Amino acid sequence: MTTESHDGGSLTGIAIHPVKGCRRIELDSATVTATGLEGDRQWQVVTDPDQNDASDGALGEAVTQRRNAALATVTPEPIEGGLTVSAPGVGTIEVKRPDANDVTVLALIGDEVACADAGDEAAEFFSEVLGFPARLAALTPESSRPMRLFRGRPTGFADAAPVLVASTASLDDLVARASEPFGIERFRANLIVTNDQPWAEDTWTEFSIGPAQLAARVVWPRCAVPQIDQDTGERHREPALVLREHRWCYSAEGFSPGMRGMLEGNAMFGIACTIDPEGAVVSVGDPVIVTATGQPLLDPPR
Image (spheres, rainbow, N blue to C red):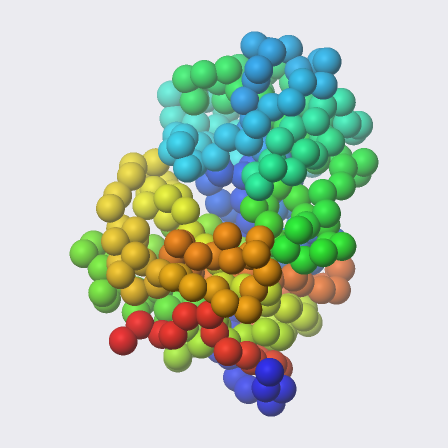
């Protein structure tokens, strides 16, 4: 690992996803919390095995865009005490955030999370959007989900890390090689960095964005979600094709067996990071200063 500080560019975009799988909210600034950025992935749509009766603590499974692209058409807006959600042809409802846990749901990578059911109106809304019985779950102050990737650190309903960081330079390099254009919002990152060197972020292990300190654990494996237009819900061929050709991980030697299973046989874009300290505010325009680097998992595309 190299520990010489250098310029990593600047922060040019911030996004949170209040309901996992639903549309992003773009911000000018965001506050760091114990689980990532304030308001990010604090709600999760889940299946309803009890057909609109979650009162007995039944286990619902996470619903994501991987198989349900219609979630991309749902716009959540945080409000005092909860949020509003709206979707074309379905309308808009206001959802109050529950105070106490009353259900356990199955998040991604198999984690069971104690949380709260958001009520029948929200269930009816998402059932209509998706075309099958579904409910909305919310994290409460009682909820806790320790991460596997960063042991001892909590997260919300994110896949496995508090924040995902992506680079516009790397996106531009990827789009130049692709058969059709696509935007960086397809990758659903929290922090967008603009710098001069594509794929430089793959080498970052420690860096700062304004007053926040970040530690990168790994470049992030991508599923089918980046193929979905994040405004329309339409599915495309790219960036799956260009990622397969230029960003495919065939071997992850040196990682634990669990990590190797997650990385090998997948395409990579963006870096999964922790972010500290709580209460720090990151803002568009903040400088990015890289303080430590390491060997990247993948070489830059030729």
